Image (cartoon, rainbow, N blue to C red):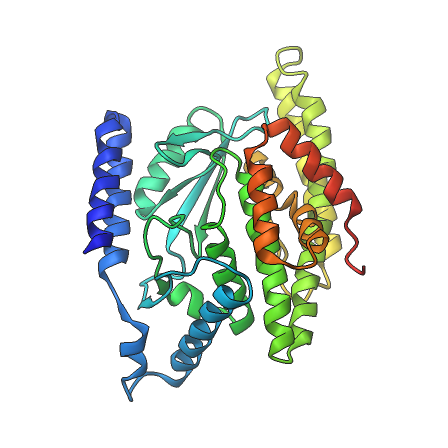
Length: 356
């Protein structure tokens, strides 16, 4: 009852400030979130069912243990999160839209009450997402629409466990639980890079400790391999982004057709370099197996999620893996002006060494 009352208060606030163009978006968001809140059943009830599928039973037991570990070892604010289970009718819970101008690498920002501005917009209704995507493409924006396995309500509500989690391999499910719970610790409005880099660092270090406790260190090597592949991909993306930034500075000085041709050449080289890099990887990398039609939105999305992961991992090392002390330092960083925050994170990242 408390959760529903709080939900109604937040949603009424959103609707009261929404203009006509936003009303449809908030309506589908409200409906989607409400369905998640009232669907499913407590995990304890499901585990009491003798006919529960064995594979799901095992994943639910793992999720319960991961919740306890997150609270006891990682000092994450678990509260009532992930205590209910929902079977989704698709492999993702929402789809996210990213939109970037044709000759820019700065994504469009959508702004909301309470949480500030974000460089993506999530939709429960895929048809609505495609309509918004078409709106941007008609204005020559580069766009990307992708399914999202999970998201956090930042502690406003108790987020449920769902089949998007349990369909993952066990270690990946546990890592995702840690990631989403991390967003309840600190959230900087308008700084996606900070928020996602922090959560990814907690996810990775939490998974390392979890696997060590369960005698499964080999699984962590796989996680590190995925991280290395992500970093290698990011290096290629940053190189292409530097070239594109130089090109885009010439917008208004060169014919549009020339700019488009030069842009396509840079993106084509990125695609070829990535395919050569990832040809022997056992899993698909950050840009997929065989990426096609790469655009500004792909680059912007990858860059904003992982830039400062080494910085946060270094900060945790500096605190000797004392998670509460680490969180206090992260909150101090969050209070800094953006330019000072980024300089501090850049210095931390320079000190990080995976093998120390």
